[in-house]
Image (cartoon, rainbow over all chains, first blue to last red; front, side, top):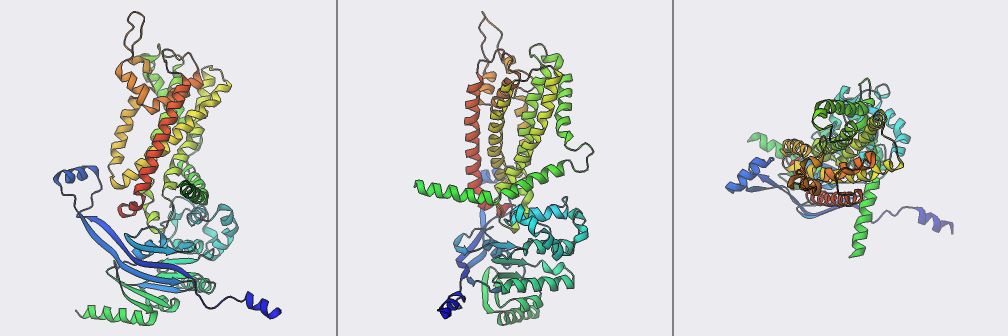
Length: 264
Length: 282
């Protein structure tokens, strides 16, 4: 009898759970030749029949399946579509064609200061930022001490954010985003600003979350953290997946490509 | 079909509840920042309408005093309601583009920002009712239970402004010059709304005891939603024999409600149809 119960308690190792499934997704921007954002130009162009839109694919035919607990790096040069891919996963951008399925709660690490109101104090910003991530005020009050402790900013909580340095903001942002165990954590090049000690602390926290089953999507140009944190990597180039697989192989191919470019 | 509608509605409502706390925090933020580092703080919400009423009263008293009883009260009723509409829509205009940095990075229902701006203006409006009470006391206007019914035109105006705000917020994402046009539109709107004059001043002179209403007066009565809300409000506060106004208060109430509902539907539909494209323009 006892044996059977222990069997039931043990988690099933097989059948991994898919958290992100992207099928043939493309993102298209209707880029006007020049950006028309006022009525005057709009009507002039409409009259002259110059209102043509140039189609521009930021992502072309992306297929990606990510399972629970995996850690993925997105690499590629600027403008390759890394951020666009993340935005599509977050639900900020809807794909023009294809489908994106996401299961679970996403915690995007908001880029420096984007979620912060510069005139509010750090304390007030923690609550607003938490609410943006979908946490209740009650929950944030309970977690508040933990956040402050992790950010190591105890003496600066009543200071308006506009007086914060970029490193301090990054600390605060990271502390708020990782206070829960999100199902999916998105880290978009925000760690680069913190000092070495804090960067290390962040990596440790990310690893801790990974061990507990969080899925990580990581964008960085720095080789070290990518190699250290991520098992898998996607190399994007001009909106297309160039290579996909284990980080070692993908990063190697990416570096070769960069070297070739340099030679030219 | 009906099941589908119910399901989308409950889903929408659940998402709204999820972000309820964000809405509350954003409203708190606006109120905190509005008077941060000012000596008198929230008292300004009372002082501001009071002072502007005094200025207007001094300027216009000679022109209109004779035809309008209790002119200061008449002025402040129109003024606080119209300022609420003007301030809330002006802030709603910027609510989406002003939060561009945030909306580019994370998923938040975008209407929350518009709604929070209009709601914080509403809180400010409720504070400014203090000025109204002061004027009522100062001019010896008696208080009646009926006064509390002003909640009807105020809620109608709030719904109307939410609809209008959503429409403007969505429009401004695509055409930034709406911002400039809107300030002119509100100016014209202000003059077309009987704030410091009476709509009866458009009436043609009495001929054989019959008062005929001019076309402009008729247009204002029928098609200016601000007239509907302000006149209802005045009726409930001042309840003086609403002189020549032949439209009874309950008719104004129904018209105002229809206007608000229509505006809300138009605003919601426009916002909903365009919200996925915002990201490409902000």
